[in-house]
Length: 132
Figure 1 (tube, rainbow, N blue to C red):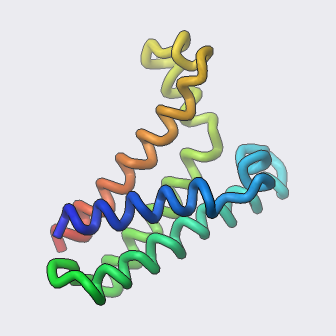
Figure 2: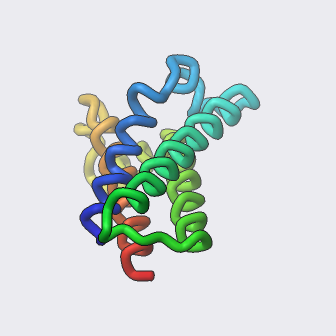
Protein backbone atom coordinates (compact mmCIF):
# COMPACT_ATOMS: atom_id res chain seq x y z
CA UNK A 1 0.00 0.00 0.00
CA UNK A 2 2.92 2.35 0.69
CA UNK A 3 3.98 2.57 -2.98
CA UNK A 4 0.47 3.42 -4.16
CA UNK A 5 0.06 6.08 -1.48
CA UNK A 6 3.47 7.57 -2.20
CA UNK A 7 2.76 7.84 -5.92
CA UNK A 8 -0.67 9.40 -5.31
CA UNK A 9 0.77 11.97 -2.91
CA UNK A 10 3.71 12.77 -5.18
CA UNK A 11 1.43 13.30 -8.18
CA UNK A 12 -0.79 15.46 -5.98
CA UNK A 13 2.24 17.47 -4.94
CA UNK A 14 3.32 18.02 -8.54
CA UNK A 15 -0.20 19.01 -9.59
CA UNK A 16 -0.55 21.49 -6.72
CA UNK A 17 2.97 22.93 -6.93
CA UNK A 18 3.07 23.55 -10.66
CA UNK A 19 -0.22 23.80 -12.59
CA UNK A 20 -2.16 24.41 -9.35
CA UNK A 21 -0.05 27.31 -8.08
CA UNK A 22 -0.81 30.82 -9.25
CA UNK A 23 1.82 33.40 -10.11
CA UNK A 24 0.54 35.47 -7.18
CA UNK A 25 1.01 32.60 -4.74
CA UNK A 26 4.51 31.89 -6.03
CA UNK A 27 5.55 35.54 -5.81
CA UNK A 28 4.08 36.28 -2.37
CA UNK A 29 3.93 33.04 -0.31
CA UNK A 30 7.17 33.76 1.57
CA UNK A 31 6.42 37.39 2.44
CA UNK A 32 5.94 38.37 6.07
CA UNK A 33 2.70 40.19 5.36
CA UNK A 34 -0.98 39.34 5.43
CA UNK A 35 -0.87 38.99 1.64
CA UNK A 36 2.09 36.62 2.00
CA UNK A 37 0.40 34.47 4.63
CA UNK A 38 -2.82 34.30 2.59
CA UNK A 39 -0.90 33.30 -0.54
CA UNK A 40 1.01 30.68 1.45
CA UNK A 41 -2.08 29.24 3.12
CA UNK A 42 -4.15 29.12 -0.07
CA UNK A 43 -1.29 27.33 -1.81
CA UNK A 44 -0.98 24.83 1.06
CA UNK A 45 -4.76 24.33 0.96
CA UNK A 46 -4.46 23.50 -2.74
CA UNK A 47 -2.03 20.74 -1.77
CA UNK A 48 -4.41 19.36 0.84
CA UNK A 49 -7.37 19.38 -1.53
CA UNK A 50 -5.57 17.80 -4.49
CA UNK A 51 -3.80 15.19 -2.36
CA UNK A 52 -7.08 14.43 -0.59
CA UNK A 53 -8.88 13.99 -3.90
CA UNK A 54 -6.18 11.68 -5.21
CA UNK A 55 -6.17 9.62 -2.02
CA UNK A 56 -9.96 9.26 -2.26
CA UNK A 57 -9.69 8.25 -5.91
CA UNK A 58 -6.96 5.77 -5.04
CA UNK A 59 -9.11 4.25 -2.30
CA UNK A 60 -11.93 3.84 -4.82
CA UNK A 61 -9.99 2.25 -7.67
CA UNK A 62 -6.96 0.55 -6.08
CA UNK A 63 -7.54 -2.61 -4.08
CA UNK A 64 -4.40 -2.10 -2.00
CA UNK A 65 -5.31 1.44 -0.85
CA UNK A 66 -7.60 1.52 2.16
CA UNK A 67 -7.96 4.67 4.20
CA UNK A 68 -9.44 5.54 7.55
CA UNK A 69 -10.88 9.07 8.00
CA UNK A 70 -8.91 10.25 11.07
CA UNK A 71 -5.45 9.07 9.95
CA UNK A 72 -6.13 10.45 6.47
CA UNK A 73 -7.11 13.82 7.94
CA UNK A 74 -3.93 13.80 10.06
CA UNK A 75 -1.80 12.99 7.00
CA UNK A 76 -3.43 15.76 4.98
CA UNK A 77 -2.95 18.24 7.83
CA UNK A 78 0.74 17.20 7.95
CA UNK A 79 1.04 17.75 4.20
CA UNK A 80 -0.53 21.22 4.41
CA UNK A 81 1.47 22.28 7.46
CA UNK A 82 4.84 21.05 6.20
CA UNK A 83 4.24 22.50 2.76
CA UNK A 84 3.35 25.87 4.25
CA UNK A 85 6.43 25.84 6.50
CA UNK A 86 8.86 24.83 3.76
CA UNK A 87 7.41 27.42 1.37
CA UNK A 88 8.14 30.28 3.75
CA UNK A 89 11.60 29.87 2.14
CA UNK A 90 13.63 30.78 5.23
CA UNK A 91 13.74 27.14 6.47
CA UNK A 92 15.38 26.01 3.23
CA UNK A 93 17.77 28.93 3.27
CA UNK A 94 18.63 28.26 6.96
CA UNK A 95 19.22 24.57 6.22
CA UNK A 96 21.53 25.31 3.31
CA UNK A 97 23.48 27.97 5.21
CA UNK A 98 24.02 25.63 8.18
CA UNK A 99 24.83 22.37 6.38
CA UNK A 100 27.67 23.45 4.10
CA UNK A 101 25.55 24.31 1.07
CA UNK A 102 26.12 28.07 0.80
CA UNK A 103 27.62 27.80 -2.67
CA UNK A 104 24.76 25.56 -3.86
CA UNK A 105 22.34 28.15 -2.43
CA UNK A 106 24.12 30.91 -4.40
CA UNK A 107 23.73 28.90 -7.62
CA UNK A 108 20.00 28.13 -7.50
CA UNK A 109 20.03 25.08 -5.26
CA UNK A 110 17.20 26.27 -3.01
CA UNK A 111 14.54 25.03 -5.42
CA UNK A 112 16.04 21.54 -5.34
CA UNK A 113 16.32 21.43 -1.55
CA UNK A 114 12.76 22.78 -1.33
CA UNK A 115 11.43 19.96 -3.50
CA UNK A 116 13.46 17.35 -1.59
CA UNK A 117 11.97 18.59 1.69
CA UNK A 118 8.45 18.37 0.26
CA UNK A 119 9.02 14.82 -1.00
CA UNK A 120 10.44 13.75 2.37
CA UNK A 121 7.28 15.09 4.06
CA UNK A 122 5.09 13.24 1.54
CA UNK A 123 6.96 9.98 2.12
CA UNK A 124 6.43 10.42 5.86
CA UNK A 125 2.69 10.86 5.25
CA UNK A 126 2.56 7.78 3.01
CA UNK A 127 4.46 5.72 5.61
CA UNK A 128 2.08 6.87 8.32
CA UNK A 129 -0.99 5.95 6.27
CA UNK A 130 0.47 2.60 5.24
CA UNK A 131 1.33 1.72 8.85
CA UNK A 132 -2.20 2.33 10.16
